[in-house]
Amino acid sequence: MTTEIEKELETSEAVLEKRRNFAIISHPDAGKTTLTEKLLLYGGAIHQAGAVKARRDQRKATSDWMEMEKQRGISITSTVLQFDYRDFQINLLDTPGHQDFSEDTYRTLAAADNAVMLIDAAKGLEPQTRKLFEVCKLRQLPIFTFVNKMDRPGREPLDLLDEIERELGLQTYPVNWPIGIGDRFRGVFDRATRTIHLFERRSHGSQEAQETVIELGDPKIEDHLEKDLYYQLKEDIELLSELGAELDLPAVHAGEMTPIFFGSAMTNFGVKLFLESFLDYGLPPRGRNSSLGVLDPTYPDFTGFVFKLQANMDPKHRDRVAFVRVCTGKFEKDMVVNHARTGKTIRLSRPQKLFAQDRAVIEEAYPGDVIGLNNPGVFAIGDTIYMGKKLEYEGIPCFSPELFAYLRNPNPSKFKQFQKGVSELQEEGAVQILSSIDEFKRDPILAAVGQLQFEVVQFRLLSEYGVETTLEPLAYSLARWVAGGWAALEKAGKLFNTLTVKDYWGRPVLLFKNEWNLQQVKEDHPSLQLNSIAPVGSGVQPQS
Ligand SMILES: Nc1nc2c(ncn2[C@@H]2O[C@H](COP(=O)(O)OP(=O)(O)OP(=O)(O)O)[C@@H](O)[C@H]2O)c(=O)[nH]1
Image 1 (tube, rainbow, N blue to C red):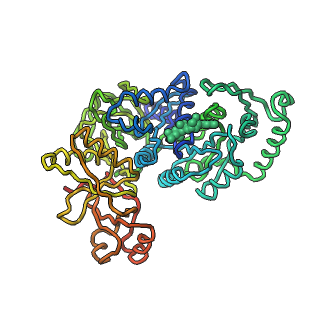
Image 2 (cartoon, rainbow, N blue to C red; image 1 turned 135 degrees about the vertical axis):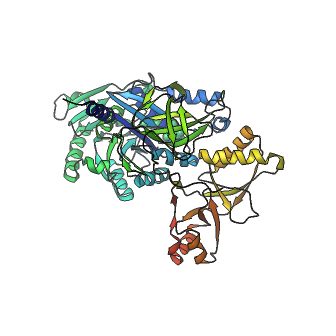
Image 3 (cartoon, rainbow, N blue to C red; image 1 turned 90 degrees about the horizontal axis):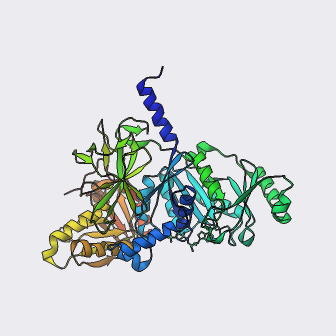
């Protein structure tokens, strides 16, 4: 006879097995919005492709603080999209399209269990994809590669595989293989079932693609596929089996091998096959490092952490939302939880589920899900909330900024608002704040990955806090945290062409003008232990 506890455990394992969570990494224009939309179309979350874009446009029309989005036609914010497919519940953690906001993407990857690397068949790996791949590698995320835009002239598939292996050091395993390319792209061959999937083009792919599935070797193939494409395919299949590694799931889950899919998001070719395989091969919610060791998702008490804060998503209510990744246990509305950083208890009374810009109050959530909580200034990025035994999750790291500028408030009567605005925007992760070690230089130094982050900060300080500010750019382009600490820095003595500053937590940071300066200091002073990534959250308290 099974006991109640055993039954509960079985249920929670079954729930976990049917949950998948992922984020898409790509270079702008590779087709992320299009693929997202098509995944939602197959998931039945929307009925006609175009809805996500329409929502995006609608948001552009209604949001005021995101006036910048409208002016520039870019998407700055990111949300979470939840949909069902087969009996799976899927969480797609959407990330901003513009590379100036990649800090936001880095943090979102901290909450993801899988990553989908989307590449343009004609362009192969691009800078933003490489950068984001590095973050995935740090977390050993399983990476699924979707080679998009096969309906246009592109590079040789084998050449793309080779590039991924060489440059990213990932083993590749093509799960399917393209039949033709460009105008002659007819579909894909699914290697697991040895079937040919041929698609019909529909205008703009607004509905699911019609597909014909034929077994390899079926004589009917002649009615559907040109001879030369068929012979080419047979040749390719042979070559693949001669070359090829077997699909090694443990290696996929360890982020060492990437399953590869070919398709065209715009015409829907290959999207469904991709989704199906992703559900089969993707990782369910996994354990996470905490002060109690790696906490398995079957741990019974509710725990989660904040990976992203967002202000004023709804212009009608000037609210702030904290996005929490549920790690263990069951989340229930109105739950009273502990907030690890402050030791306070908090009632989670209006949890929200977010679908693009729509919200619905949720009653419960499970590991792998993301919930949106109202944040009246309580939460900061990396915060842990928990029930039961006290614990804290490993923090979300800060990544090296590349642009630096003093932020000045020329109007002394606005000092208070200025301070409040700067500290709230820092907590929200809109920008990193550094400060000079010179007592007399009290203006904060804004540190960002992209220029647009500065513009957003200035825009929001003016529109939300009523403070007009000016910027004075600093001629540095790299930041490194000094893991050796202040003592190592003092021992190293005077360093040329660098600026010593401290971060929000009072830790030493060195700014460098260029890579060359950095290399020199690294070689001359190994004891400084320069890091491009620094932990935040767990155990680190801001210095007052
Ligand atoms: N031919 C072709 N075009 C595509 C395909 N997928 C996307 N596109 C086009 O590529 C362009 C960029 O697509 P988006 O989906 O907006 O790309 P994105 O990556 O979200 O772009 P950002 O918002 O800049 O990050 C659009 O004009 C799409 O219509 C595809 O499979 N084939």
